[in-house]
Amino acid sequence: MGAMSTPMFWAVPRRLPGTALALRVTVLGCVGALASGCAAPGADLPAAGNQFDGTYQGTNSVVRGGGFVCDPVSYPDSITVSGGHFDYRFIDSLAKPAPVPVRIAADGTFSGQLQYGAEDLTPRGRFLTVWVTVTGRIDGTALEATAADYRCTRQLLLQKR
Image 1 (cartoon, rainbow, N blue to C red):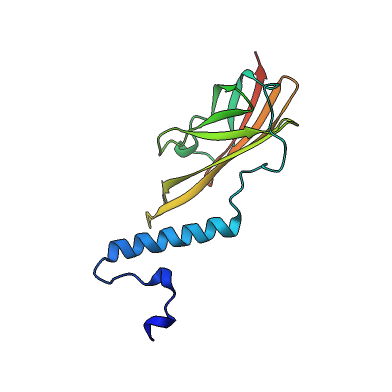
Image 2 (spheres, rainbow, N blue to C red):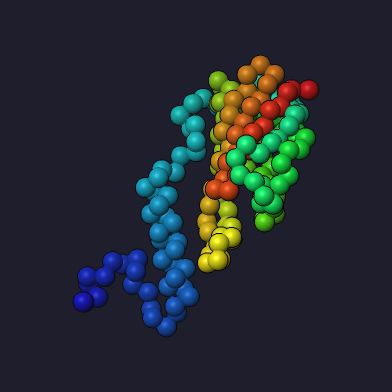
């Protein structure tokens, strides 16, 4: 097979195998991002202004999954909305808490997502790249949301204070 038949993004010097793998992963990630679309969720809806601004408090509970990876099962939670955005504090017992950026549309619907690395807990013990998604709606003074990753799904039931 000649050098001309090899796609350019696979043409990497053999003396740098770690770089070749990193380049392949990067290229595949970019191709995947282009194939799945790069627009933010809900980007076609007009953004919310400050009509939903405030602090919402209530409960955050597991509705799918279990065991230590989904702990705590239920806990009091609070979210502060400002300018049509909030950060959802995603908690995975095997990873550091991370903020998921969430955008609110003018109709009160919202969504956000964050990609992160996780360890596969099967005997293989592989490293996985997975997503957490946050979706929901603010209706009046109630904020209802679902936060899901590949292990657990949580439901948030919050009221504006």
